[in-house]
Image (cartoon, rainbow, N blue to C red; front, top):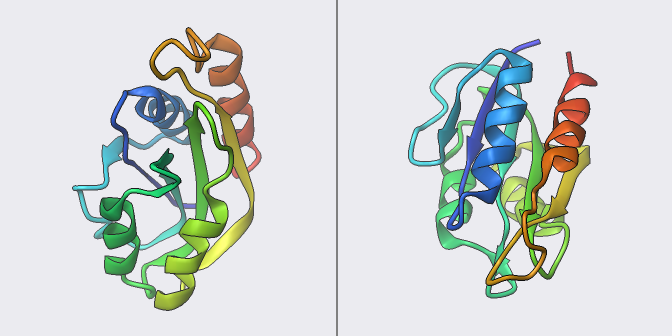
Amino acid sequence: MTFAVRYYTKTGNTKRLAEAIAKELGVEALPISEPVNEAVDYLFLGNSYYAFTIDPEVKAFVASLDKSKIGKIVNFGSAAMLNSTYKKVKKVADKVGIAMDEKEFHCKGEFKGIHKGRPNEKDIADAVAFAKQYK
């Protein structure tokens, strides 16, 4: 299996998850400003809700992906208030013809004092365990 990890974060929470997942998979976690140039079986995409949707940069990144290079997108992230961004990412991925894996990882993220200290060590360990199932 081949992997790539990309993430978008405003607070650093999703970056922490991305780095843990990438380490487990033996790749580097990179921001979405870095294109996926190589063919991969799984693109792990970290993102979160901002103003009740995914950031326009995440939408543009997914829309720019070359469907011939991406097997499936695996969604992951953290958020203080809302949970899964799966449906929002899938909507864009469907438009470019890239499949989404049915499984995803999500945990709480700290924002303005809400969920202080999250993602915590257990969240990071859970993210690593999630990634292991793809190896």
